[in-house]
Length: 379
Image 1 (tube, rainbow, N blue to C red):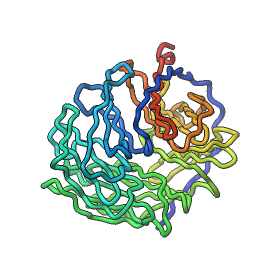
Image 2: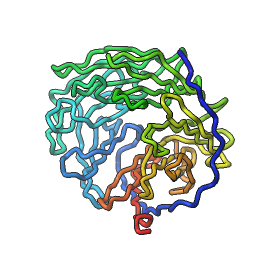
Image 3: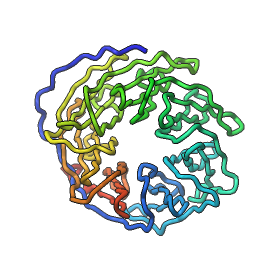
Image 4: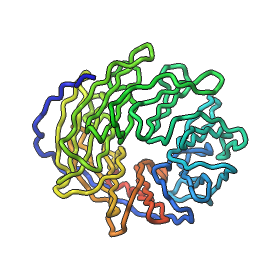
């Protein structure tokens, strides 16, 4: 294992204020107890070019689909029931068999199950395909790692110290091809798969909360990986989150590590030819408990923003990016409801070309949609 040289850059001078978007909140009630909001996913599963919401109802032993109407609301829920059911930790939507129709991937303890789709929002439940895994899945990514036009599976198992790579076979099955060692006593908070060095091969990044290191596995051309490199993050941190995208407009993917202790801090690791220059920016003087971190462009300025969801108190914040790697914070939603775990994502629910926010709080039966009023686009 080797480290990457990290150069500390001083904070840049304050930038002009960015446009702060406004949102209109819509709330959807559901009888389902939303115990694993992180298993939720948004995608178009019925080929109508509208965003749908898919989520499990664990105690009812069902997977539920709310079909989007294109105006920020949803149609009556469709329910997929199962004769045998295991707790679902993640759901993904991909075209696994290259038939042009999206499929549902249910990630459960000990197995990954594929429900092949018909393209109209319905799925096969009698001929499901399963791949065995070794335990409880903490994180999963489904991508084409080896450029064979077939989607592969990357998974991290709870209390295990490896990243497991399952390559797709031409017959539709998956074979465990590689296990990448992270470190002893690993506890992975995040898994990111992207091309960090612009060589057209997908690299793997893991955030380990026990060591407080970010581990980077660069891919070789033959499907193997280089010895891991790592980035140090903080002396102590709780409620950390990590995302990756091009935050400083240089056509290289950067890593943003956010954590709370006495303050909320964003450490932006700027990618520069396989080395990373880190800028540390205090986002909030007080501490909040981060639980969900996603990337979008909330104010339509073509600079990437970060959306943060918090627990204990149900709050949503936007870190508005200026395209140079600096952020300004905006409170999007705040109330006194207790929150033990939440899930957020960003997309355009009502076809106005402005990005909206969806939020699920496990301590309520509400699905909250925050519709962007597009005021920043008007200006």
